[in-house]
Length: 370
Length: 203
Image 1 (cartoon, chains in turn yellow, cyan):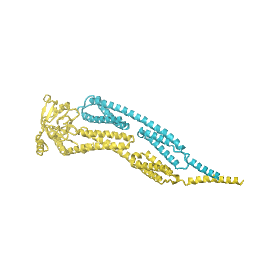
Image 2 (cartoon, one colour):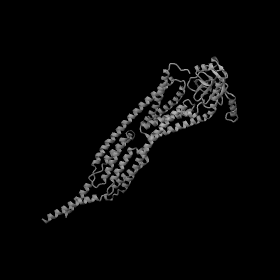
Image 3 (cartoon, chains in turn purple, cyan):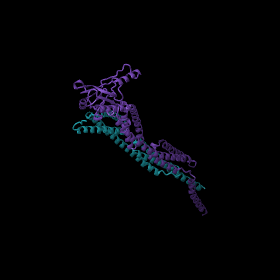
Image 4 (cartoon, chains in turn blue, orange):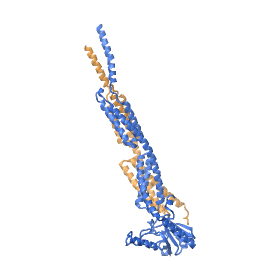
């Protein structure tokens, strides 16, 4: 009987001690940083949702590397004997990961916001620049290289706009930057040429004023050709009587320097001869006294200072003639009007009528702000 | 004495059995990882980025769960196995969705390429009819340059399409079409204006 009681007691002791042992085993098992890992993963996920992988790539990549390192270390520790495990490194990497992910998230949100504003503003300002370019340079003889660059710039701007609308802000920014480079470089190049050209504006204004005054004083007709606006103004008694569209030499910018440069000369001239229909191949024509004394003097000094070769010739036979209305600058340096306009002008002018050709009658700033 | 030894052994065996009753679901992990890789190969990150991120996220959670179970004395991998199974299904769906989306974008690019080529062809015809008076010819000259740029863009878009970069091709061809359509509208307006005029004005 005593033996039975002893066995029962032993069994009871074992039964009680086993859970206690198990509980003690569990109690002293090293605990992995599950909470820290969960937090790191949540922050990583949030950062990814906010596109930190795109807009804060460095920090996000670092956060991801730290998280992966935490996982690797966790798995490595799990392979060790349960009581020898040490999860300190895991916790450290998890903390580093969450820190970096949090920074990446903040960085991404602020970068995206800034980028959205920046790209939108730039796209709008480049669209305005395109409008100015179209206004100023559609008829300006830009080199084909610059025209191509402007065209490429416009296309990239369109691509930037499409990427922006799709929410691809980095891509939009890249396209916009390329577009900006092409458009601003082309615009600067073209406006520098134009600004240099307009340095002669005070001289042109003086010529134009003199011509109008002469018309008033003589109570007669005088003509002013405004090259930039492609206008032929006919004045009578100092008042504007007619306004025609004019077409010029292919390279109309600047003063004519040499024969064959396809530039329309600038200066104060007079009509020296009137050619009827059967005397010219351009319907009707009014021959000007180009080159005048000033042109000759300028040409000679350019030969003397070597800016023109000694073999250069000054050119001549500059006329106001018909066959115009083509819409482009196509002459070799003459001024072309439509045949109907030529009929009008031919009827009212005579030999000796002043014809003044200027770069522009409007100041550069006023043209840009028009 | 013999009984005591037996009971001790039984207790140790029970602890050993309990602590090793769960085995890491390596086969399922490998299968799910393979499905995720397949989704990646199907360019899920490009065509269905949000869905793909969700799968990757889900896998991270599972791997953390498994590691957590692996750290315990008494492991239980049942719930992880179930999650792996659903993630595997999700990864397969993401791969399929990516393929569908890719086909959609591909078709869209094909349509856009056909459309833009037709607009360019129409523009070439319209240019011959467009008015050349006043600044018309100068504008046409500018349009010619722009048409050349559009043509280059179409060629580049076709190249991207041939390489399978449909998303990039899509942006490029859309931009080319926008420009081509803008020119088309400008040309049609100019032609309509001329047709509307009864006689040229004399000043």
